Amino acid sequence: FFSAVPMLPSAPLRRHLRTVLRACTLTRALRCASGGTGNPAPRAETEEMQKARKLLQAAEVKLASGGISQETFDKIRKAATSVNPQLAAADGNDEPATDLLALSERGEVDGVQQLLAEGANPNTANDQGTTPLLVAIRRGHVDVVEALVEAGADVDQAGAWDYTPLMYAAIWGQTQIARILLRHGADPRPKDKIGDTALQHAVREHQPEIAEMLRALVELQTATPSSATFVELEKEESGTSAPGGAR
Image 1 (cartoon, one colour):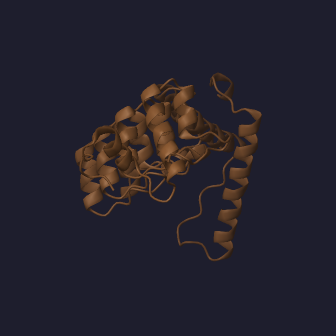
Image 2: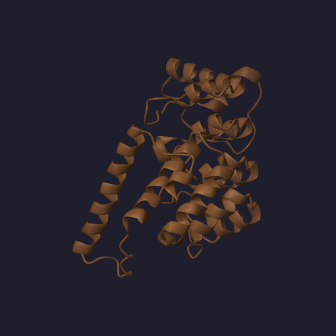
Image 3: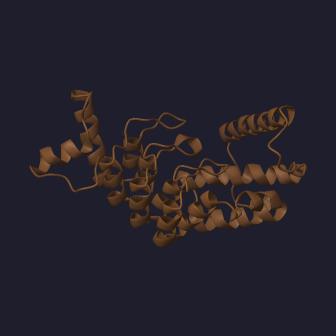
């Protein structure tokens, strides 16, 4: 199975995944020691099941960085789930937050808005740290991004490898979404695990319009760090008020 999958994590990524797995194991042990949550304990994973989980985590990182396509990721997820059914359980649709993630990925804005109105948390992440906002950005669902942000989605909440929503927009060339995030206060200065900012991702991925927006805001923030916002930058450049909905 694993030799047939055209992607294996690099040495640094393997070290990172080992750290994550050790942390998860410790967390489960502490929960058991404190009496647990009342839920049945998950079935112990075999070595092959653990490999499948690690492979899926590595694929999530690759997808976030643009290293593989969504189609390739879906194939890896399907193969990993066939080896480790517990991965499918983690992605089940019995929780509103998980439903929100799935609906956001599919771009079903009406369903997203309904769940948000019913109290679903727009900032809930899956085991890989992926939020509804991140998957909506990756897929280019502008209306879903707007719905999530208006409902309080954290525009700076990072996912796997510390990739922020702005980094996702830069990597996937989502210029309109980058502008929405910036209008809602997204910070262009955070760095990912290897020290790159959203601006560096935009330059590397040949996204000049996004890079220019980010560069201009960073320069403004450097000059006036206490109050500079993208809305002010737009006003300064256009001489008109920015569109509504910004904060």
